[in-house]
Image (cartoon, rainbow, N blue to C red; front, side):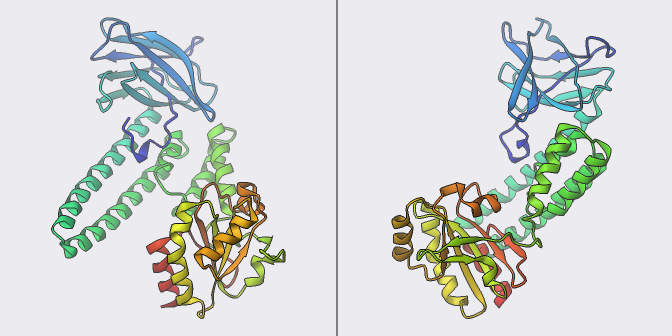
Amino acid sequence: MSQSKYLVLGLILSVFGCGKSGEDGINVSGKVENPIKGELVVLNQFEFTGLKPIDTIEVDPSGAFEFYVKPAEATFYRLNFYNRQQMNLVLDGTEEEVVIMLEGNNPGGEVSVTGSKHTKYVQQLEGMMRDQQADVKELNQQAIEARMADDQQTLARLTEEYFALMKLRQKELKTFIWKITPSLAAYYGLESLPVEEHFPFYDSVAQKFSAELPGNMFTEELTKKVSALRKLAIGAEAPEISLPNPDGEVVTLSSLRGKYVLVDFWAAWCKPCRAENPNVVRLYQQYQDENFEILGVSLDRNKAAWVGAIEQDGLPWVHVSDLKYFNSVAAAEYQITSIPATYLIGPDGKIIAKGLRGASLEAKLKEIFG
């Protein structure tokens, strides 16, 4: 597998079969075009804590190999050939024969699979993602050339083409994912779609999994993920924040209702946060009279450092903190695992955007205030 975005489910494993499934499980077999004497092939099963090796063999000198797999439920596997080529499979226990043909020593080598429709779906998804990567690579090369030539017109055109391409590819991907749900291959495909941008689709797929593949650990994981994100989805009511300001007075997010509020999670020790502050100050000065406020939520542990950074960076907006680092109540409510992180809240108290920084923050505020 390549080290690209579509490999987000990088913890998956495989199984093969060349006979009827029975007491020994599914017989997964195949042939390696380029066998390496003495090298091992490892069959791993995916678990949320990591890959679990379940069998290891040497490939026959002829290139033939064989495993038996007994999935308790539909799940992911990964076959690792000599630490050179890996492939992912999905098996649900209904397979009668799974046969795999591959090069074995080439990370990007061709793979042929028969007998597992779910694995075929995975291959189709990977093919779609490879096509997308190839298109993006070509656009990037053209952009590099245009930038070197200082051709701003071409750069603008290529940017438009890029966003149009992403929109088209994501539409195609979503159509295919919906078609194959509740195959676990759909779960695999979802990892290529930014959940923040496609939350309604994630939600719909999760509901379909729950109805048609109840009890499966991936169904439960997807449902859990969607449930956790639902309260922070665009359009959701922003969770309350109630923390003390530097003077010890408790300030609440709800007290700012009626304004557009940028909730800015940051800290004095966070270099990217401090680097972004001049841009935020500039935008605050531009829009503070336009019904716009900022609520800075610090994940500092030291009050002196927190207050010092506010003064040094000249941050004139509202500030709060419980000085509990990432253990902050607000950080937990907003599922903050890294900073800087922002949420833009509308006058009605609902989330209207997330993750705005730099140019994206400026563009969103310009869209709102003109």
